[in-house]
Image (cartoon, rainbow, N blue to C red; front, side, top):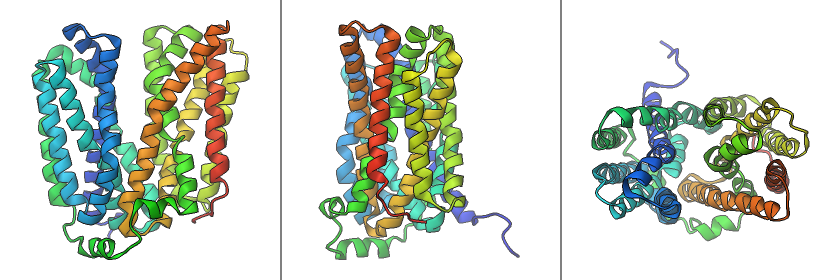
Length: 405
């Protein structure tokens, strides 16, 4: 009998494993906004120390990316992911103990190192278990379904911490990570010999070789402005804009930020589906880049008499930024299987490293505009315009790429 499902049972199991991996990372990335105020009160932390606690995980992830890319191509994702998820579990246990600030920092670093391999490993798993033309669609499904991890790291985590001991809540998170590690070890195919042998034999496997490829460099150029604009708005400056510039209450601003996060989940599936169905991946990406930058330019120029227009433009911008899904599919098309780990690592490294730079740069622009006497709304207008220019520049560089479907 013909299988009525689009994918085999084994492919669905692999998909669910990838969803779990993505959800785990999203939970730890989103949870900082919930646990930071608690730890500030508990340990009397300054703003700098609190920021260091949250950012330590991201910096550890960035620093660990490059070596993990090599190991993934040579060893394969099954072993690497299993150990990395166990490392996340160990870090979460330390975090649950909550003995001191130093222990908390150490736990966040362990979690960050464990998360470093997950994006590239997921790309390799999808590439080895699904057709090339399905890469973007399956990646979109992973982002959409795995987005539940980010949601759990917001209001549900706050709800749990108000009603249960800290140790129990994060101990449970560590236990879930252990279960996920076991599930990954069991579900991911161990027969990776062919791909690994090809990686070991080929002389064209290094990062330098990738960085000499013009098409790959164009992907990296656009990768700089994929995650950074989203996280800069949803994770830092969106709240001050909504409250200080357009006068929403903190509760209303929180609701808008939740809408922005949900829009990224919806967009994950939408862009995966469009990547599968549309004839031109290049056109899809360039249209999305254009709409995203145009939304920011409109935020910078339109007279804002109320919050509705601003919120609608922010939602449009955040939704369109999910062009990183077809961008990953483009990378999958042009990179050989035995180099996919390193290629995915470079794209992830560029995208993640741009986040703190854009967050800081946005704040610097606000400070400079304030120094020259601009009002709050005008300060944000200038910063939004600068962000729109960066996205547009990345799109113009990428526009010279070859279409891959």
